[in-house]
Image (cartoon, rainbow, N blue to C red; front, side):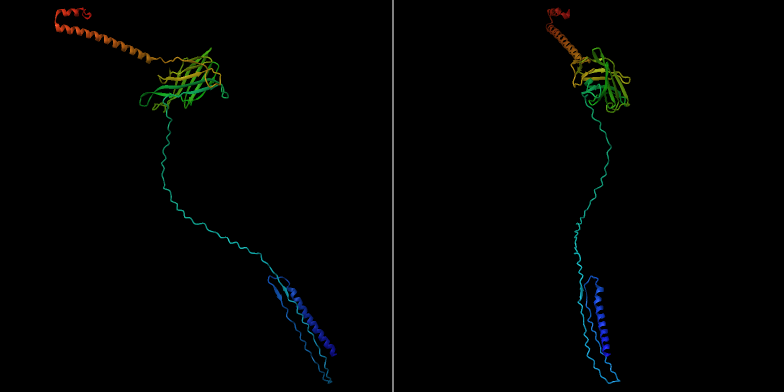
Length: 362
């Protein structure tokens, strides 16, 4: 009986030891989750001490000495479970940016002095007027698309127009045809027209053909009394001038040329004494060519009479006659005085005889 109890006690003790060891072994499994720091679990040594109990029965003084029970305590020391979690952090690259501040430049701005600019009034300076008319060349074509001309003219033209100033002075304006004047006109079979325009002024040439000859049959001018050509004029008006007589005649297929100055008296309802002066004239109407020059020319006879040379010749002839007559008269007078002086000194009658024979005493 006692032996059975001892076995039960021993079994219970073994079961307890086993249970204790199982808890110790299972304890680390609960902590298998990795941590950031290494965890070392050191299990504690479990020592089980069994105390033997001796039961003494009083009724019989029987002393039972049980066999010594040797309890072998198995101490299981589990290996320390060392869970090492090594987290290698990414290398931290520290970039040091050194910003060098730009040097502070102190700019001292000196304000410019305030300059007051007085804008002068705009003065339009008129182009100086030439001293004489300029020679220019103009053409009138049959059509704008072709270079075939019906009229070709080269000349220097001047218009002398009398006018009255604001202070009642009578002056003569000299209006020159500029070589930059624009040309236009018409090319008819019997009448052809050339128009030259500049600024607000214009001149028109009408050429008429009769059988095999042609000439200028009408000249018309429209002149504005501006301040350039008519300084201090009483009014700004348009003066119409014309000449109606056939001049500058030539035969067909030939040109007309006259280098001398030709003056034509112009008619007007507003002024009197206006005159057209043309020089270095070379023209050809009823022309049918694209050539730049002229055909054979007929030279002109100047329409202006040579009054000055004729008057100078007459004056010189009269002067010669007067000088010669005075010389003869003075010579006779000196001779008469010579005879009288001789008679006065001798006072003789015979001295009077030669004097009586002189023609001046007869």
